[in-house]
Image (cartoon, rainbow, N blue to C red; front, side, top):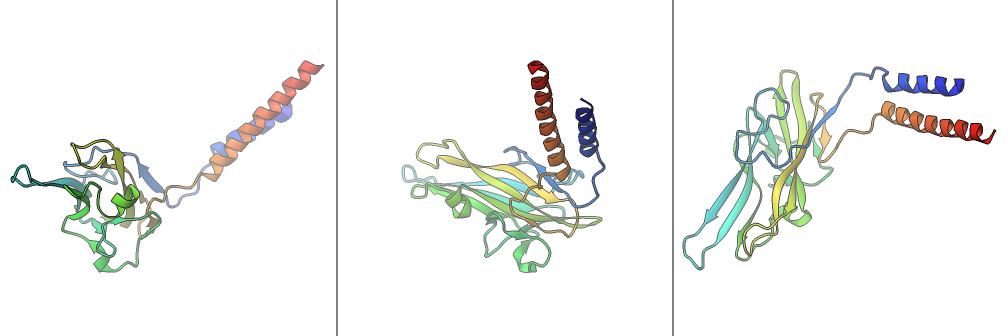
Length: 220
């Protein structure tokens, strides 16, 4: 029993040991509540950084009328959105960080992420239409420097009107580097903490040792 107590004590010390200071990827799961409103405050400083809105267009020549919907994003408060090869939606793993050309960034105008129209176009356009998801790369400024991150757009399987797309885009999550001037890959999330992994292993071994001890006592 003494060895088990010592092992448990070491596990607790590992779990609560001070972590070294450094970069951290901040991740938020925000759902789809960020359309047509004041914008997303990425770093919770009271200033919105990105605004996502819907643009609709319907012709009046019924019954031959057509309908189109576009999801667009606009940078706010000195933020920028990444546009590679004239596309706003980018794939997983794409580099977002220092060294990109100024022409790869949009700092003022809104840009279309994905859109569809009926009749004849019952799927969403671009990368999001093809894969079912995509990312919007962004940067924003603070007093400490430039921070880089991504917003994930997901096609949710819901019906939207008769004869239109069976999916509707929503914001799934977003993340950014807490340390300025540090790149991030689209879709990148924090790696599991080494301390947390050690603590979990310690807890598992402790349970095994305890069960062995109980088994030994029951056999006597």
